[in-house]
Length: 336
Image 1 (cartoon, rainbow, N blue to C red):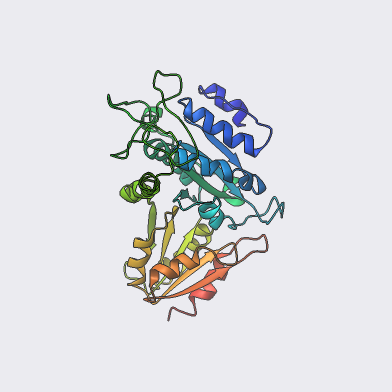
Image 2 (tube, rainbow, N blue to C red):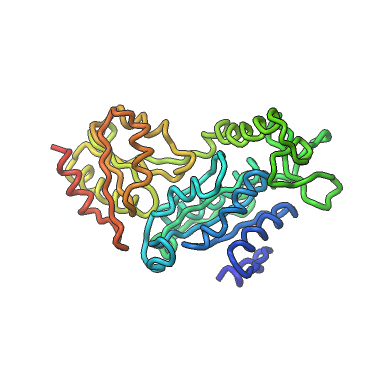
C-alpha cells in the first residue's frame, strides 16, 4: 500500500534488501535533507539496532516503526505482544536516551507519527513508534487536518550564520550534504564540526547533550491521558492495545457502577512519564499494570510509585489479548 501511496503525495518508497540496509538508507536520506521513516516487525527491529545507535550518536533525525509481534525470534508472526518495550529503550549499546511512542488506536497512530517526525527533526533524534499486531491491523475513522498544519519545518530549514553541526549551545539544525556546508558525520564522539575526538571534556559534553535535549523538551515529548474518577482509589496504567481493554474495564467500573477507578494511558513510554505516575501513586492505594508480556513497564511504574501505592501486574503472553473481564476480576479485589 505504501509503495503505491507515497508517490501520489510526493514521497518515495524504497524496498531495501534487508533491515540493516533499510535503516542505513533512512539515515542517508535524512542527511540528504528529507524526512525519512522505516518500518519493520520482530527480528527486523533487532537488525536495525546498530544503525539506530549510529543515528543517536550522529544526531540524525529519523523515525523507526516497530509493529510488535509475539517472540522471541519468528515466534507467532500474527499474534499480538508487547515484548519489545525494553528493547526499544535499551536495544542499542551505550548510555543514551530514546523517544518511544506507543499508540492504542488508529487516531493515536496517525497523530503520534506526525509528532515523531516533527520531534525527530526538532531534536535531531531517532524516534521509535512502537505499535503491536492489534493496532497495526486496526481500521478506524480518523479526521485528517490540512497538510499545512501537520509538519513543522525540517531541521535544515533555518540555518544560523555561525552554524556548526554539533554546536552545544542549543538545538542546531542538520544541514543537508551538498548544500555548501562542510562537516563530518561519524559514530565516534566528536567536536563541534563532527570530527572524532576522545578528549574527556568533549566526550562528556557529547553524552550530556544527548540526555539534556530530551530533558529540556520533556513536556513536548510526554503524551499521556487520564480517564475515569477524579479521586480514584485504584488506577490502571496501560499502553498500546491493552489501553482498549483497560478503558472498557474502567468504563464498566466507573461509569456503570460508580466505582472510584481510573486509567492513566501512556502514549509516550520512553522517556518514561515518571512524574505523572508518581503523582497518580499519591492518590491511590493500588496501581494495576496490564501488559502483553511477563512484566516490563511495570518495573518503571514501581520505581516511580516509590512504595506510595501497591503495584500489581496483569500479564498475558499466550498470543491473545488481555480482556476487560480479566482486568475487572483484578479490580474487584481492590475496590469495595
